[in-house]
Image (cartoon, rainbow, N blue to C red; front, side, top):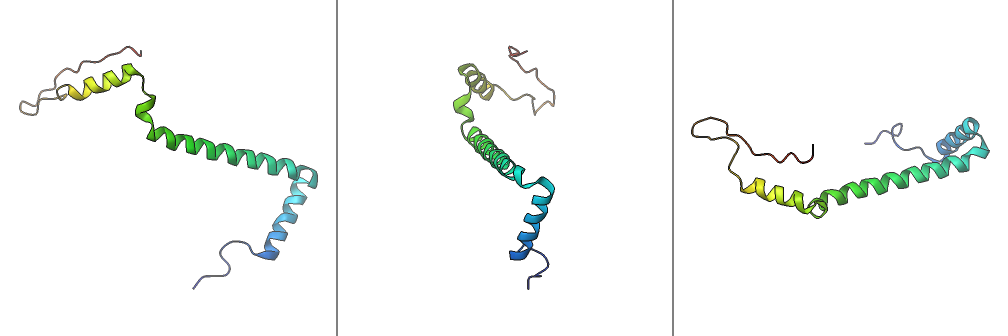
Length: 97
């Protein structure tokens, strides 16, 4: 059973909230407040969509040099020798420094 005291505001509660907002911000500033809130929400949605698309297209955005380094790293021997327990030196391409 759902508790009626907890949840989304209903009818009269929305009017009370709207009246408080009008008193705090003033009627003249409400359109500007709504417009800026809409712009912020639109920017947020665009950025989150861009982040999701970036995760899907990571390989497409890599430069040929990055793809070559990745393929070289995959074909190299592991960083340590499991039989002897000693750590082997890893070749690095520090061209980004």
